[in-house]
Length: 436
Ligand code: SAM
Ligand code: SF4
Ligand code: F3S
Image: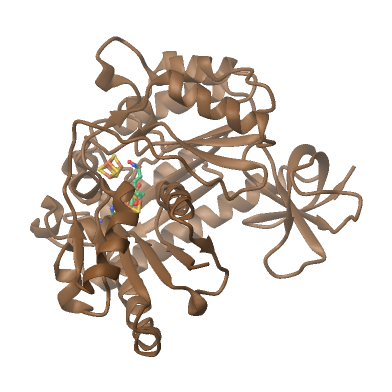
């Protein structure tokens, strides 16, 4: 039997796409291997959101050259966002790859592989059709959790971001199709699902019949077997009280909200084409905290956007102190060719960006630690995920708010079991506890 291996980079959307690629390949008789050096087909499902992501992937592509030299029948395919962005240039930079497959064409993987086998020539398909969303079945890889895409694409065009260019326009999946998927997952032992979209709050807007994200949340309430519904990513522009009410009243939506703000300066938000203000954002958070008890709040922030002054940056630091996020994902602005911000005047020097990133992380780490410390002595429901990365005798689980609690391995527990854990000791990113 021929074997495949998929390297997945980037966001959860790509994780989910890789599961769809895997299903397609298995239909064609391939089986997965854990060792890429033994594979007959290697797929790199790629990301290009920042330059660092592209560097890392080109590095890996370079490393695969020696495998190709050893096995001339090995097929290497580049799929996803970087394939969509760099197109045929990928062959120029790395002639040893065989296939470049764009984000709208994953369903063609098997035909492309067959063409390479027949012709031994480069194959490329980067066509985009923004009018249809092709349903593709997945091979779920999680034991108790699963991804559920609810839409594709992004219409926001934030001036720094490549995603709308490589993923195309927003198209939502019908509520019935999503409910059907979730029912199946519930019936096959999956107790946690994560709804995926670049902006879940724009869900259904393309139906133009008043359907919104809150309707989907209501429709998913109470599906047998499903204990937790996660969702990402939320967007402050489209999120509204109706949706927050639905999140608050659902019996299984989690207490975590990831709501990227990107900057604490209204001037920079405007330049980013993020069409909300810090004041509006704070009102949303107040309402979320009122409706979703025990809310855990996380965000994304970019430092060093073109024209960001010391005053703008101080506004971001102040925002962190005002909002007190549980965690923030902080990024240094990265120029993406083809986006407006890449050529804006007043690019911030690299050294300044690095200093700002560190200052931001210092403030945030202190807040994260304080909030985690407040959890000491409290008991939380967690779903057991298994051994921690560094020690197989230490297991971990996550709370509804997505906080990780580590505890000593206990033979009587199994992966996917829902148990209660008391937090004994808090650190900045993790908690140590005891099963009670
Ligand atoms: N759709 C989501 C949103 O609007 O927040 C997230 C999309 S993106 C995959 C994840 C994060 O990457 C963004 O929230 C942003 O902070 C960051 N990002 C996107 N483009 C970037 C760039 N050019 N440089 C640095 N960070 C970037
Ligand atoms: Fe990128 Fe903005 Fe779309 Fe998020 S909303 S994917 S940051 S363009
Ligand atoms: Fe990267 Fe594409 Fe996701 S650019 S972050 S993999 S949508």
